[in-house]
Length: 96
Image (cartoon, rainbow, N blue to C red; front, side):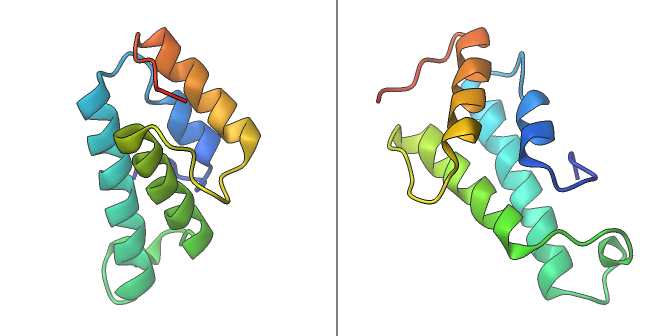
């Protein structure tokens, strides 16, 4: 997992200097790792800190936002603004 604290802002900051497809890949990889913790309590990963389903939901909303450029409901405006600033630094402008 990228964010050991299950912090969406920590994860977003790790996306700096990544291209568009790599950002989607890393978000998807993080969401998959967290879901494995949630739904397979016997795995090695689950012995570490377990993130909640809210974190997975936020990750999926960011992936949706990147893929379609539409702001998903339920994602905090401050997270969207922070994510937009990272995308601008990476020269990826999303349609709004």
